[in-house]
Image 1 (cartoon, one colour):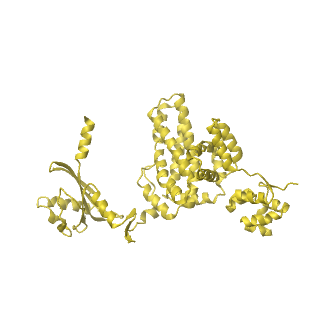
Image 2: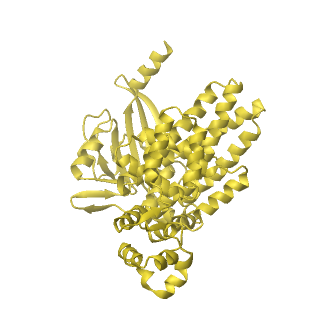
Image 3: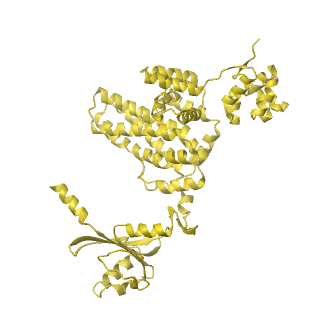
Length: 468
C-alpha cells in the first residue's frame, strides 16, 4: 500500500500514522515535535501547511524530504509552476476572468506575501518582470468580495496571524511615522476612489474627482523613490520593485490620459472604472504585502531617513505632512571620518567638496554670525573677493554708501524678519541676480549670511527665444 501524506491533516494525525515522520520534521526545524505535550495540544490542530508558515520553513523542502523518504504528498501546490502557467495562458490570449477563477481556487488559502515571494523567485530565475507584472491584475482575486465589508473581512482574515503585519500595525500607530502617513494616504485615496465610483454618471463631479485622484501620483512617487529601491537594493526583495512599481506607473499614466481626453463616453467610463478598481487593489497590496515587508526589514535609522526625505514631497490629499516628533527632533551631525566629511545627507572627501563648490555656477560667499567673512568659492568673479578679506568684518569690504544696506539685510536675517533678499542688476554688460540668504541651523537659529551671485543672461536668452 502506498504511503500518502495529506498536508491538510494535523501533525499529530500524520505522526501517529507514520512515526518515522517525526524525525524527518525534527531535522527540518519542528523542534517541539518530540515533546508529547506539544504533540497532544498544538499538534492536534496544526497542519503541516500552517506549521511550515509559522516556523518559517520552506514548504517545498518539507515536501521534498517526505518524497525522498518514499511518501506521496497530497495537497501541495507548486506555486511557481502555477503562476507561470497563468502568465502563459494570458500571453496566449485567454480571458482574464477565467485565469482569475483558477487563481482563486488554488490560492485562496495562501497569504498575499507568499505569492509575492513566489513572484520574486520567478524573476530571480529569469522570468521577465513585465510578464510577472501581468499577474497583478490576477491578484485582484484576493480582493474579490461582492461587498465592501466582505473585502475588509477577507483582508483582515488573511493577515490576522501574520507577525509581519503586526510589526506594520505597530509602526502605523506612531503618529507621523512614514508607514503611518502612507497608510493614512491610502485611507483618503480609498474614500476618493469609492466616491468616484458612485459619481460616474455625474460628468462635472467625475472630472473634479479625477483631478483630485491625480494626487495619487505623489503617493506612488514616494513609494518609487523611498520604498521600492531600498527593498530591492539593500534587502534583495525585488518583487514589489519590479512588479508593483510598474502597475503604479500604469495607473498614474491612465489617470493622466483620462484627464487629458475626457470624452465621457461609454469606453471612457469603462476605462475610468477599471483604473479605479486597479488603484483599489493596489491599496490592498500595499497594506498586506508592501507595508509588512518594509516593517519587517527596514531599520529605525532607515525609517528616520525616509521621513526626512518624505518632507521634500507635496502632501497627498492632506493639507500638511504629519510630523514624526521623534525623527523631527533628532538632528544629524557632521563629522570627519576616514578622510571624509560625513553629513546628514551624504558624504564627500575634501577634494570632492572643494571641486563641487567651485563648480556651482555662481559666486558664493559666507559671512558668519559675528559678521566675519569665512568663505569664498574660487574662480573668476564679477564681484571681486580677495582672499585677504577672509577673517575680516564683512562691512569693511563695502563702500560707505552700500554699508547701511548690508547692515540692514544682516540685521533682518539675524532677527528673523526676513530669510532672503534678491537684488537684480546689470554689471559689465551682464544681467545678474544677487541673492542674500539667512543661513540657519536645524533649530532655526541664525548662523550667518550667504551671498550668491548668478549670471542670468542664459535665462533671458531662453525666454526671448520662446516669445519669438
